[in-house]
Length: 224
Image 1 (tube, rainbow, N blue to C red):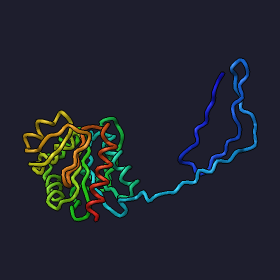
Image 2 (cartoon, rainbow, N blue to C red):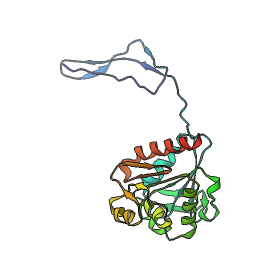
Image 3 (cartoon, rainbow, N blue to C red):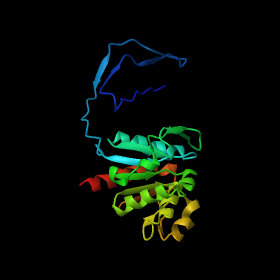
Image 4 (cartoon, helix red, strand yellow):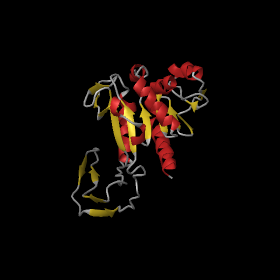
């Protein structure tokens, strides 16, 4: 005997089922035409934009880690935030490690900490380039001094290391920069996400859900 089930969607408010599979003895199934059956799945829609009107800055340059830029960018936008991606040149197109392009919304030279509520730093090989840019380091120091969000994932921690803002801070990051973090005075933890005051850090792309949830929580707390 063949059992066929049809799962009701938890997303679509109203689902019409037009038939159920009918199987012959040989196991061949066909949909029979039945009177449509209506399933009311009206759901309460909760307010899902906790970052409404909050402004976030992200860095971009060539060889960024594709997921570590795009996942937070889209997740924070979905939560109501306004995300600005800044690169060496406004309008410049930068390609990730896996070839995905990102066009910079603004130039790093024009960025000011006062215009944003927080900073998110993706990983990849990009941080090893930007950590040599004094403008970038000054921006990171300004966010940290103001007590605003400084979030870094994977090799993104290289930039706060060079900015000198991790001393005494509990952090995680790629295993490849563990020694760099410790040498910079950070307190290393091997965890999917570590939150220490306004600092949020994660290790790798697999940690992105926890990373983004923590970013949202820190920003919500800063807003209060």
